[in-house]
Length: 300
Image 1 (tube, rainbow, N blue to C red):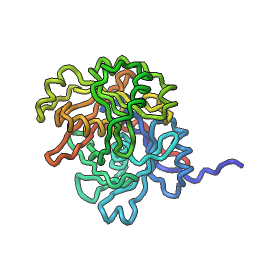
Image 2 (image 1 turned 135 degrees about the horizontal axis):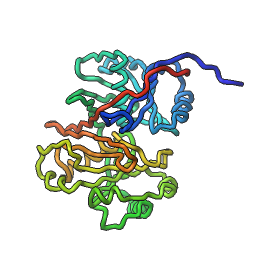
Image 3 (image 1 turned 120 degrees about the vertical axis):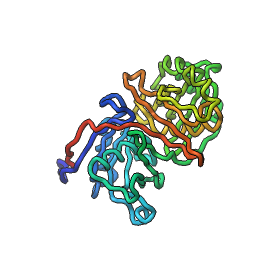
Image 4 (image 1 turned 90 degrees about the vertical axis):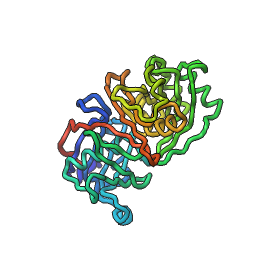
C-alpha cells in the first residue's frame, strides 16, 4: 500500500562552517517534526543522502524549565545520534532564520539526547559549547589496523585517542597538515572495522603558535579530515563533533593554543573553517558560519 503524505512541513537546507554557499557541509532541517515517528525521521534522513538530517520540536517540559528553546532529533543515514556539531549550528541557524526567539537574548539552548547545549553568536558565527569529552588510549591492535587502512607509517602518528562527546571518534594527530591531505583511505577496510576516524595535522606555523595560549588567527592552524564509512559517509566535509573533541584533547595536552581555526574539506573541494575558543573557565566553544541554500517545504 502506498504511503500517505501527512502534510507539508517547513524545510531548509543549510551549508555549515562556510560563509560561501556550497563550500561547507550541507544539513537538511525539517523545522516542524511534530507527530513524526523515529522510523519516519530515519527514512527521510536516509533519503536525503546527507551526513545528517535534523527535525526540530518544542522542548520537553523538563527541557523548557531548564531553559531549552527547542528540541532537536539528529539522524545520519543509518541511525539517530546523541549529538553532532554541524547539525547543532545548522539547526540553530535555521531556527533563528525562521523567527525563533530564545528565552535569553543572545543565547540559544538546544535540547537533544546528549542533554542541553548552549549556542551563542559572535563575529557573525554561531558557537556551540562542546559537550563533556570522554577519552582514552586506543587499543594497539585497532590503531595498527586503522593505520594500515589509512596508509600511515607508525612514525607519522604523533598521538592517538578514543574520543566521545556524544559521537565516537578515533582521533589521530599526525606529523603535519601535508600528511593529512595526502591520505588515500581504504574506506572498505574502515567500514569493516566499524570505526569512525578523525585525522588532524598542524600547519607549520601552528607549531610555534601552540606555545602561546592567546594566539589566534583566521589562517587555519590545523587541517582535519573525517572518515566515517562505518555510517555510510566515506568522508565528511566538515565535522563539528570531531573538531570539538580534537580541540578538547589537543588544547588540554598542549598541542594547540586556546584559540585557533581548523580547515576541513580541502580534499573534497570544500572550504570549511571551524573556529575554536577555550574560555577562562575551560569551556571549549566551536563556531562557524552558516548559509541557507534551500528554503521551502517537504511532505512528511
